[in-house]
Amino acid sequence: MAVTDTGQTGAGAKKPSPLFKNLTAKIAAIPMIMTALVVFIGCTLWTIYHSFTKSRLLPAPDRWVGLENYERLWSENRWIVSIENLAIYGACSLILSLVIGFILAALLDRKIRFENTIRTIILYPFALSFVVTGLVWQWILNPQLGLQNVVRGWGWETFTFDPINNADIVIYGILIAGIWQGSGFVMVLLLAGMRGIDEDVWKASRVEGIPAWKTYIFIVIPMMRPVFVTALVIISAGIIKVYDLVVAQTSGGPGIASEVPAKYVIEKMFTSQNLGLGFAASTMMLLSVLVVLIPWAYLEFGGKKNG
Amino acid sequence: MVDATVNAQSGPRGPKPKRVMSSTNIIIYGTLFVVCLYYLLPLYVMIVTSLKGMPEIRLGNIFGPPVEVTFEPWVKAWSEACTGINCEGLSRGFWNSVWILVPSVIISIAIASVNGYALANWRFKGSEVFFTILIFGAFIPYQVMIYPIVIILRESGEGITWFLRLFNEDASAFRLMGSLSGLVIVHTIFGMPILTLLFRNYFTSVPEELFKAARVDGAGFWGIYFRIMLPMSLPIFVVAMILQVTGIWNDFLFGVIYTKPETYPMTVQLNNIVNSVQGVKEYNVNMAATLLTGLVPLIIYFASGKLFVRGIAAGAVKG
Image (cartoon, rainbow over all chains, first blue to last red; front, side, top):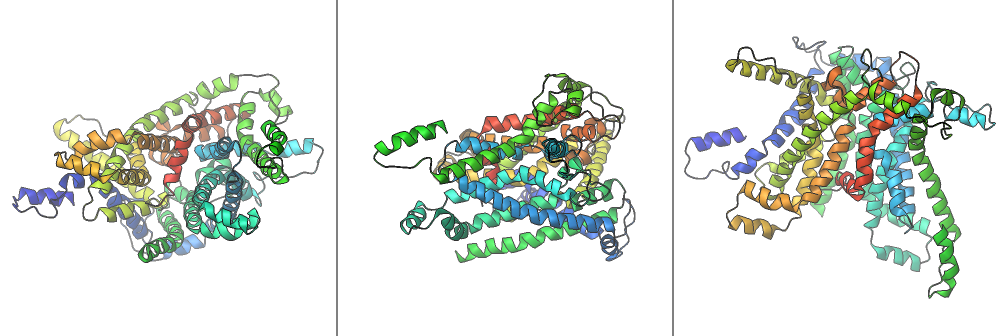
């Protein structure tokens, strides 16, 4: 766009054309415009287009194959397992982090001592890399030397909790680590929302003699709807992206028991050079984000219109 | 808790009798205490494991404090741990990460602050559209854009090489793909949405009279940016820096894809060291390496306090 601007001024237009207005600002915004158009729109469309072509290794002549990649994708066991894992991890992680985050925020909201210290402790995992988180929990959950061993040492000889090597529960091991890392963030978000609620609401409920927990559930939560929606969107976007945590904690194992879509895509693209499947899978990821994002944008947009 | 009992004793004498040691308070503080223990546990385990010798780890309790404190695992993790045939330890990854971090942070903040400034004070036709695309782009899974970016980096690297060879036939091939500069570009691109939002919201809150007065005095786009906006907004630059330093240091995905083994950032190298299948697992070295990698963001986090919270909350505040 900015290129056409300079072209017009070069032509020597005496009247300041609307394109010429704010020229410096437009030139300064070129990196942003390029990022928006080339990367966010261009690359996304490129990937969607190529998910309908038969490209194993680019650059190669693309051949339109319609939905063939998608059919192969959904008939592959590894992808189905990935989707199931994402569904379990996503549902549990969403509910748990919202519930835990809300309870913690409500506790911190009770005008307690050491609030800053406690908040600092609960939030610090969020500053860490997923790789660090994954590796620490891999070690704590180590069946021979970790938590299981310690509990057995306490005299509970038959205690079994091995979410590293047991394919049935491995995704819950990742869930523990994910919640540990992310719930502090949800708490901070919800606490900020809680602090935004008018003090008079609390006074009124005290006058009415409503117990605090009832006030939280029936008055505060409905009032915090926008904050919850924002938290929901951010958490969901994070869940769909989950990749490093799985790579570090279990490498997708045992076998393919803890595979997730994000990891599936990277491996199809860069390890097994099966680009068509990778593009189809990443388009499916995009689709799942849109399912969350579009209603949210609609609500936001609609709300602004009405207000 | 000591304070609480003191208050309880002095409470009845005061004007407003308040039961500080009420059962509700005991539940609240008790719960929070247990919660804090849970959150601190992994950090504690990392520290004690990294200070134990391997025999002690094999026999002892993972939660037990070290009987004999040794710093050998730290030395080994830093300078001797192996990834494949390379045995230089994590130090190489650390320096790679530093070389990725410094230019990425500077460039991404420079570009995003100008973006935010243009969006807040110099709106042009379509600027809001690009901003909306940017914000929505933040939600697109990286996996959707990763492969075309590989191609763009590869092709523009070749384009630059061709251009350089116009002037100097022996110019060595310029590479963006697999090099640190390519990764810097990627970090700048993907840091842009959140940073632009941060700066735009901040600059919008600057009183407009200030901007108008400078305009009347004849200051232009860059004049106002450098002489008025920049000096006024140091706090937000610090917030942006905290956000970017922790974000880029913790990145794993881009590091794996856009660099080569020699230029792997610390997180990728850490994963390769700990999850390598060869050799005997040295848990103490692994934990020392993990802690070393987590140290930079942890220091920033504990030093920055509320600014960190402000940074991460920026993503949640509507613009």
